[in-house]
Length: 175
Length: 157
Image (cartoon, rainbow over all chains, first blue to last red; front, side):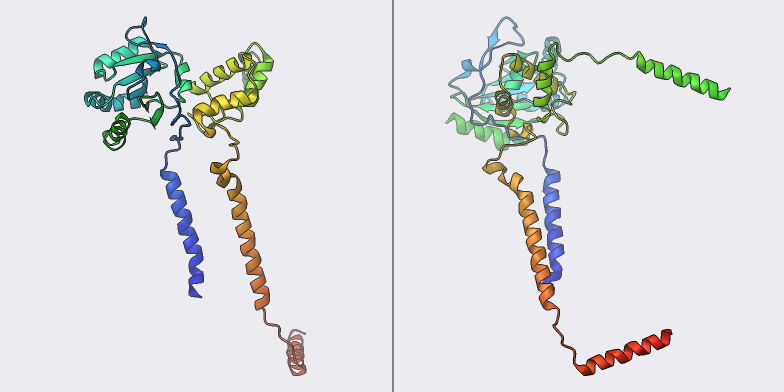
């Protein structure tokens, strides 16, 4: 009978738990509908050599990483050393997509901070970004041998994420 | 004197708004623009999530409105445009997500909670009603009560 008085307390604790979970989740991390779908095709000029183009088609047969970045994006600068680390690991080629940027700014940033990318495609008006559902740079995709997106991360990469998610995913897909 | 200066200032200030520039037309075609607004009002801007795509000034919202304009000029239907957005950004872009197993909780949840509340209230009220003791007063009881009431009346009177 005494337990009855505990009901409001239990309800209250339940509410607090729900709110705490809700407050600690990042509302910007929206599940991408592109996971397990074919990476959208595009053909974009390369950043360093504007007369050459890049198309995801050319990466068929290997597991690769697509990193959407821009020189104006502060979080990209933050994740840059992590990308350099990823490139050094030789686990997978890292392709950049320079999103809504100016060529000279982007090239200057790579010259200053090091270039982890095999190459970067240049998406000046952001049209390619729309097809990939980009809404907050940096965003990182892992694309498998068949050209299917297997993983997406929104926001800067960290060493933790690299070790816990990216590397295992890459070795799993490369098998 | 002060009053006159004040009035003059007020008039001068209000004139300023008369001569303010008109808002730039959004597109040459008002029909396209009307459709753009009706579609994008029902969509969430992913950058500033409390704003609709129609109202947001973010860069991405600008690009997406441009994209929707192109789709409209290509003769795409509203549904086709909506699925263009959902394919890229997920159901989250829609302010009215579709009813499907993943969103059942979202759509039905509030009514379930309301139902539980009403059921709980009914159970509580029933129990309270049946717990009120059904006392039958005897003649002796009634006399006692009358006596007490009379005594009280006398005191007041």
